[in-house]
Image 1 (cartoon, rainbow, N blue to C red):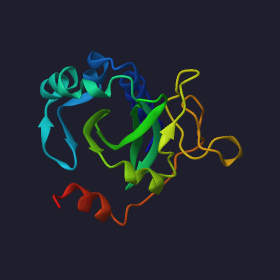
Image 2 (image 1 turned 90 degrees about the horizontal axis):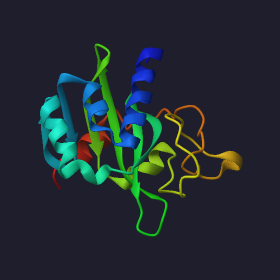
Image 3 (image 1 turned 30 degrees about the vertical axis):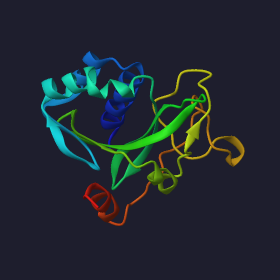
Length: 171
């Protein structure tokens, strides 16, 4: 990915963490799609995706994201607020980009994937705003807290997409 694509991902991270629906929708191409394996079906188009985020998708409000890669694409570990504090692993979001906009968002709702990306399963309470980027370990090899820069993105190939395909198919 080039610098402009990573800047687009950074803008997505910023808008998602603020849960600014108008800013999120503005980053999407008109024909963008959203899928959430293992949930069947998908959303198509900016209007449908915006309605989803304003409705059923509002459970993502307050989430935190850490950057990684999957199958050569930018990806994010998505963490939702945990009942006891901090944030718990929720989904790996894989982002497709085309023409300077997001063309696809695929949120694999499988917290068991996080170790494959060297992402922690829990983030501590946020002490400062999360930077849009980074993956890996925090200082001294400890899992990073939300708000820590986690270094360069981790590159992971999920067995040629076979694992993601397998997880997205009904059992």
